[in-house]
Image (cartoon, rainbow, N blue to C red; front, side, top):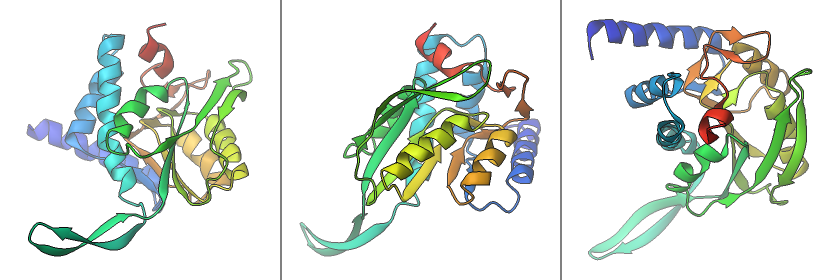
Length: 229
């Protein structure tokens, strides 16, 4: 990586750190592969086939960081040569993608969490009010003892995340993490006003929202680009 590229990465990290401030539960994943793939994902010239592939690859890389905080318990196993102390994830895992765009991240995450249950939550934003509208919900009812990963590529206004958190809390979810690719400062602030300790994992904190509630510079409408419509 050139000196100029290193300098650019440092500036991005410093800007993200300024937004994060003292928020220990806001994790900006600063990784060269994530940064490169996200750059290609943002490019308006990237077609839907490449967009899907890149979205999956980034999701896989980020999922490792999300799982870092999972609680574990100690176990002993018998290797071919002797006993060995080990660990296993203490609680079950439930993945909850927000439809539509969250589907593009699901399959890759399942590669490293194949035992996970899956819940689906359909939320559509009203383009005039910018408020989320529920159109589908199929989430396991017993989430109290589950590590829940809420999945949505974009944290824009924060409305969808707040609506989703209401659904999860109604099902007694206690161990929730949010995984998103790109976040806006306004969306982070709104989520923090209701959920000050919710762990948020993102690949980038962008500049702002525009008048239509889209993240700038962002990557456009993730669902439209994912499905080619």
